[in-house]
Length: 525
Image 1 (cartoon, rainbow, N blue to C red):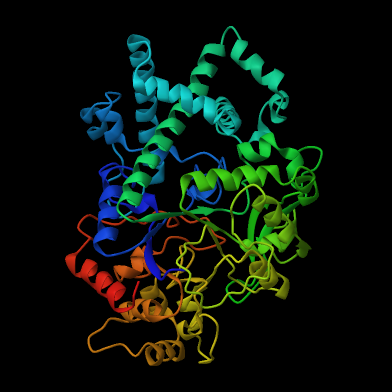
Image 2: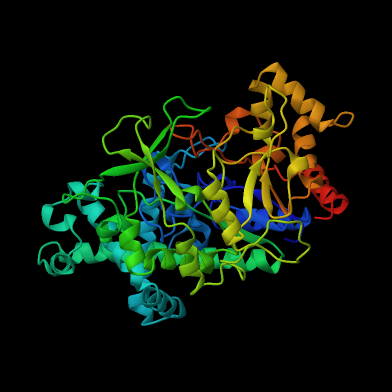
């Protein structure tokens, strides 16, 4: 890989007057910050519609985008809302976190108003440029868009209940039964309106994301997206493809995903996602995964695949268990999945060959990043070697009370690696260093050898920049030197503090831009 660096910051964490970060002006301003700091990458968390616990990793669709990320100013500019309508509503008073309850209630109401205006405008104009673009989008994306719109319209009709609690005739994906909903004389028009609304949100999400990506690429910034390995049970993906998941005859999971007990949790992590039926997926050459990877490559320059190890071996927990203590390791598709996908998509020019993770000087950028954290079997390492995908290392994992050398310390990095101070699932580096035991803190200080008056979080960042790793990605919270209260997520929990952190206005200080730029120049990034 070409030596490079970037920043990890989710869209929701951007400053904005509307309670949550969006794809509008603040996103372009952040690209400007990256450009001025000589950063080459911007990594975001999954952009899919958030589900249970406001988590982007529990989504209603693996293909759709989150409507809350739509920029309202763009809708105002197009005449579908007024500035007054946007300014007079309550998005939450505190700019330092997302009040998801208020933002969802308020913004969805405004989006529905915009949809009404859009429909009226279309009727009057008889086919303006934006109308033509909308029709083309619905046609081009019909493969997933129609199913997503139907799923969301049915959730609206069923008071947001999970699909397994809908009317029995709609729990199974039956096109004839669903068509009858649109033909119903009493409620058909309202249902069709709901279908169109959800397509409308996806059109503007994609339109705005495409504009942001063009702006970023034009300024030399590549966008890294995130693919959660598992689909949410309450999703259009599971509802329309029940045969691809380990479900019983009633549609209930037989086993669910998670990770076993470890150093961080005595009871493990019970995620609850249904597991894939890999034999069934193999029978059609993993078509669902082919489509998913293809869609991600249309949205992002690089893709991070979450929990990559589960393609080799995954942890299966019997459905109904309250913790992840009782479970077993099962074999995933392994290299067969990626060899099959590589026949259709250019995942890696050497996939399937004996690709070595060496200090290559090749001037290239990765298409896929494999999140390979945690306790790994040798077979997982072999899968990573087979694909050639770069794995990840986390500096804060390297500091331990025993003072032992380990793979997460920066002197052990090689070119084919993506390295972080921490991720969205970790404490901030300052939060970690302030809460760890004295032996761990002393190890960190001795290892980092901070320069006079250099804060420890900058010493951590400098250590990564100076390493041999091909790409360095630093969470924005660590660049700002924030404490534990700026943590993005505590894995395995559903807490009000998860996913809500936002960056306040005025955080793009000149001193920070100059510091990052200097690091890039000194360490050839």
